[in-house]
Image 1: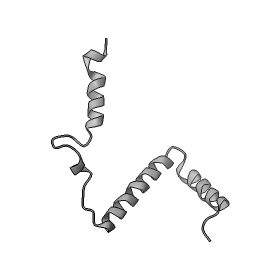
Image 2: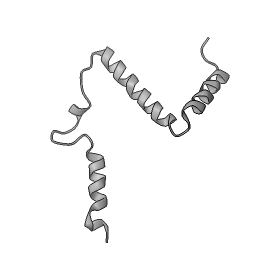
Image 3: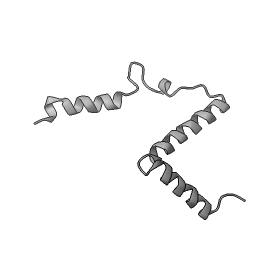
Image 4: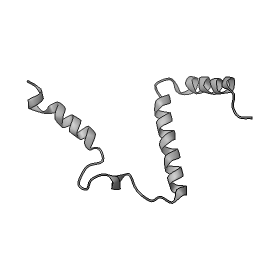
Length: 77
């Protein structure tokens, strides 16, 4: 009794018309992270993603490292 292929295609076409092709991947990733957090809340697992990182590192260190590497004079040669 689940969704069949034509029904899934109709839903996808409606989403494409409503949000556009560039916005759908963003919606999918935010929905996935929301489901992960929801499941984590029900399982009682209180472990944060921040605790997985080494102490003293920034959570956005990858973008900071990329910015520093792009502006570094050693890469301009």
